[in-house]
Length: 483
Image (cartoon, rainbow, N blue to C red; front, side):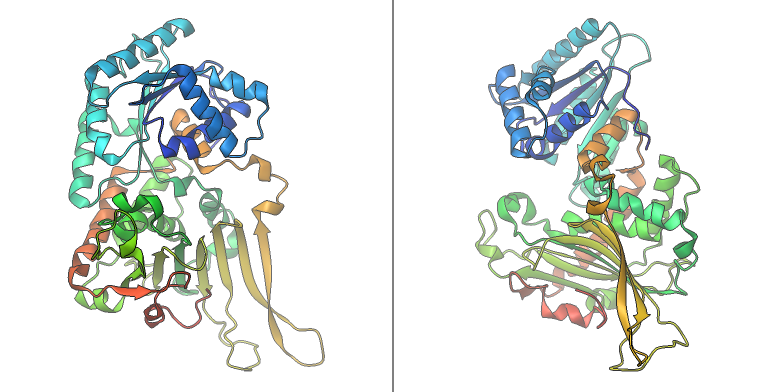
């Protein structure tokens, strides 16, 4: 997690360079790293795509992407960055295109006078993973010069398969072609500053870690709400659904960060092993739990969206009541909830502590005087603690108060990297801490597929767009949940 400048010359090759991911995330993040002096002095980007572009066409595309993001970079910085970018045209299944990429990389290596580090970023649909990965390995793109100084790494985006079988097939392919230390599987939520700060909050402060267990915590609510609908993702989303789209990755990783044991260090292996332990401890859902501890729903009007089947049974909302079978968390419910077309877009983790017994609390209106801790992942990134104080006056009346650490108020806010800045930088540095391991992918899919398959005969209820979700959610969530 150090922020030292990358020193070894590096070439990033982006497959699917003309896509939405490059435009919205990758190039804004790369120029930010470049402007901060975090990249190597000898650095190049090769964009690969099927459009008949020239280098200038790619540079024009990148400039527009940077400007659309609301660039704070001056013209000199942008112009210098664009000169580092070149384009290679070709079909992903055409071996001659990879030969052309190899020639470009070899030419840059000769210019720099040494073997460069090579990062291959698959910013493409998962449908293209196999052909690209096989072509990269088959063309020897990671072995273009003598010596052992330079490395080759592969960056792939979620989803890592669409079910357990396809995930296992992808993992077999990756392990066949590359070593585990070369593979960087991206769940961009792990790159968010607030997610990472859960570790600091827990393991760098005595105040809460001693109460971070089933003796003091009543429940945990993990929520990922979206105000938008399926929009232009319907072709991918329909048939996949909310559970596999964000439950299998984002929410399970959030749960792992909250529930993991102290890793004892900051190495990637130590942290990933502790996350794996959490996923392994999830109690499987039997028939009773599927009926009483899960809920699936679809927002009204979803079936009318473009590219959605007219009678689609794809869920756009889900709620799970999950338990862990270990000494720290046994008996504590973890509520995992997510949906589209809800009241607001927000992602947060809320920890509800048990009541103080006995409590020096007035029994007015039967108010529960709980301490509540919330990590706001987005928007308004912050950590908030609700506690109770006496209201000024002659009577003993308690009122809630809050302590808040808000990132927006921090003098260091300018130093906070975008999630993709962190992902790209850590990959170049070889730090796999914020990337998902093979075992995590497998464990997550085993749990999710058990629910997904059990839902084949479960009812699909509806909810109104702009609501907090289906009314039936309150049959699972406790009354004291804070919306």
